[in-house]
Length: 267
Image 1: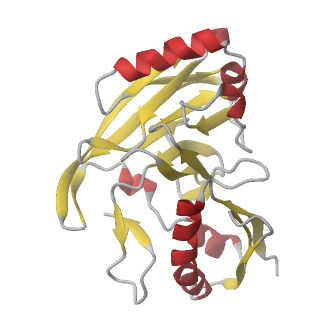
Image 2 (image 1 turned 135 degrees about the vertical axis):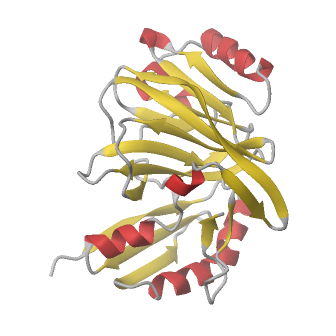
Image 3 (image 1 turned 60 degrees about the vertical axis):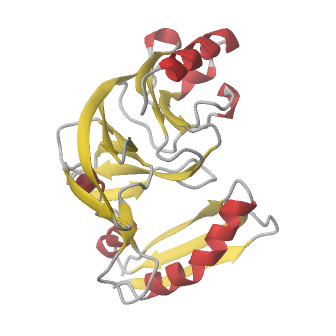
């Protein structure tokens, strides 16, 4: 029998994030152990109080993919009425522009960070120009999506940075999806001009910004602002990347059908 496993790191940027992990980790471990096909799941602290080592193993690819797909990003990008913690909003999907990448190597990070803070995602895409959508709710950006094909995703996988996880930190209330090479080579003057363009945009902002070498990035306001947000690859039935989604976790709540607290679903 061929099992499927993953080893990585859960990284926090500060004590507030680490405290949140410590609070919810026992329930998360308990729920994962109860999932069909789970053989092992451990989250162990490291010498760094903001870093944990995560090891998981499932009986097969199907059970592992079901574990990864607790959040349904396809449903997240469906227009609907959403009620979260007693408040109701309308989830609306709209086009925000085109991502142009000449290298196919992408970065997702806070647009307020220095350009040399960018790190490439472990998986790349074909160079090209791709449409970008967002879903809004409660007057804010709930998620942003790049569509690399017209195929529907059948599974969602963490879009991780090598040696790190698929969750990135935000301290300046913004997020960008950019070509890694073009973004890293921008001058400070060019970056300052693009940041001013973003700041001047109507809120919740979602704008195209030109990078070096003819590339175009997408910059958006990050949900309720600062925090830590997950990034996912949507994979089609042939195993090819169909979408990249940054989820600001606005339209999620605890699953009412679960016996234990801790599992989040899109409403």
